[in-house]
Structures are given as C-alpha cells and as structure tokens.
Image 1 (cartoon, rainbow, N blue to C red):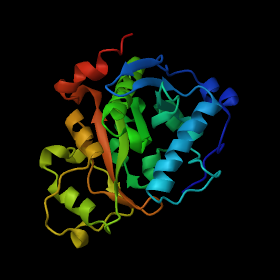
Image 2 (cartoon, rainbow, N blue to C red):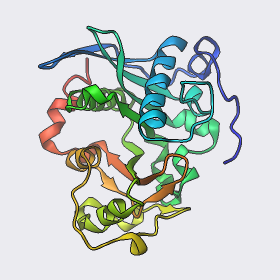
Image 3 (cartoon, helix red, strand yellow):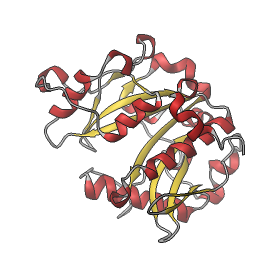
Length: 273
C-alpha cells in the first residue's frame, strides 16, 4: 500500500477546515422500541476517537483483525480525510454505530480510494466526481437489531442528497472463520440481478479462490449484505480476500437513483431539512 500524506490531522487543523465543499447534515434523533438514538457527524477529535474505539472493539476484539496503531483504537491514514457518521445511545451516551465516508474532493487529495488497495476499479472512473466511498462500518454487538444500521443508512442518504452525491461505493465484509467456504458459496448463490452490469465490474487484486472453496451449497446473504441488496445496491463481482481482517470483501455499488422505492421515503424524507 502506498504512503498517504498526513497520517493523522487533528480536527482543528485538518482537511475539514481546508475544504468546505461538503455539507454535514445536522444532528437527528430517532426513538426505537428500546433506545433513543442520535445520528450525528463527528466534529471533534474526541468524537472521532469514540468511533475508532468502537471499530477496534468490533474488528480486533470480536473479529480478530490485525490492526496497527494506538492501543485500543482502529486508526489508519484515511481517517483524517473522511467524515465520520456516529449513532449514539442517548441514555448511555455511548457511540454504538459508525461509518466513515470519503467524499470525492478528499479522494482526489489522497489520489485514490481505499477500495483500490483490494480492487481494480478503473471501470468506475467516470462515477468518481459524485461518488462517496464508505467503510469501517460497525455496530456494537448489543445493538444489532436493525435500528442502528437503519439510522446510519438514513444519515448517509441525507449526506448524499444534501451534497449532490449520486453513488456510494464500499466493501461488505464476510468473515472467513470457516476457511472461506461460506463466502464462496455466497458469491455463487447471488442471482444476476444482485450483480452490477459488466461495465461496472471491479476485479480483486487478491481474489478469493471461489471455485476451490465452493461446496455447491446455496446460502443466504448475511444481514448487512442482504440489507444492501434490498436497498438497491449491486455487487461489483467476485470478492477479494483481506488477510488483515481475514474477510472476503464484496465491493458494493449503490446509486441513489436506484434506491428501492420501499425505502426511498424512509431514508430520503429528511434530506431537505
């Protein structure tokens, strides 16, 4: 992986203050059956640290990922260039869900997308002026009932609409504790309408050996992938193997214009506020 400029910048002197060409939507609150949730964008170092601490808990402690950086935090060079979406439980004040978003002007400053470390995405070049890359998504294990991820998706939809962004790209990661058989069977179980058209395909630098690992069993997608597909997202081709996280990464493309009508009002209803 090539070196990136400025591994970390404090919020007070970061790229956020150098380029204001994106709008961070205001804080919103939702109430679920169990929790009062706040959806907000990190505007301080402390808020970013909360997101990085949750990411470490999920990726390192729960999933066994090999992470470098400060103890107890998941930090990489992209963080300083991203906007960080947080869901907070207002009763405990803990961050219980997060996404990070790389807007197009920041991707231009870095010179590449995070996904390019795993995939050849040259067929998507024409989309990049209005494309945001999302990643490092995670939800605290006590909050995986759907409400937090729905709140995150609503926040992302508002962000895209208020900034005029049209396309979202990111990896949906599938664990490989079984050696990769489930991930291989998952890819082989995808129907044609779950995949992008060939002109939007991406190609893994280190592809998962699907043909060697598949067993012929038809499997259902995990909740996150299933949710993406229901929303209207498409998979850009065969998955890549990420050895640091020990996951099979399915590059996923979502175009706001193709959102499933069932979800459009829910996710996009507050975008104009």
